[in-house]
Image 1 (tube, rainbow, N blue to C red):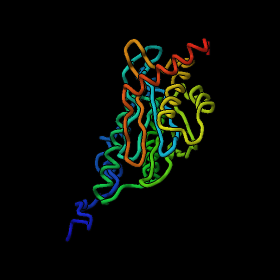
Image 2: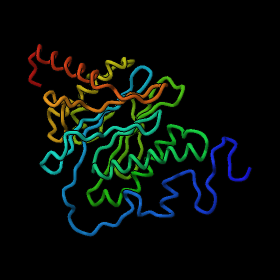
Image 3: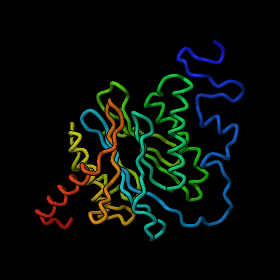
Length: 273
């Protein structure tokens, strides 16, 4: 039947139809895109920035975690910001950089994947998702050159696969597959050092959560823009796991227990660093 696919999903008709929502909007109304605007020359005002994101593989899946602090210059802009989001059922996305543009990019990417699934009647492959995210980062390059950069971290699993995969990006949209673990953001150098020491093959999901939280604690210890777990306010990192049954947010109770275990262990050892 005209106008439909065998999958039962309606097809876009007419000039400009596309299975890519990004391409469709770019052609028809680019001003709606988070990076489809012209900025005046001159220095940019201070804007909230988000850091730090860590991701690692474990037995049967992949995990991503982000701290809750956003900074604006030397000020703490927010202690409650969320930087890790489900992109779709089998992938997650973490953002570091200019918070406003990054969150808009996350929403656009979520719509992009949903749009593709509805038009094509099938999910985009994990490799395809990573490529489309790279195109969005590349489209933001003019804004990045004016100081409004966004650097994401992407992770997911192909349905039926035994292991998850990680992808990092640079501001030009360059995409790089990472093995085992990775981190982005201002505290990433400290988090990555912790991950090198703590990660091991075939981690259990519970141990992977503890490793990610401890890496963020180490990052917060040496990077003022990264916020560690806040025991007074009961603020814990945002942590997602992705396995064959989909993406799941780790509960506050599990994170509180992981933080308590790390604090207890370090207190017993009387560690200074």
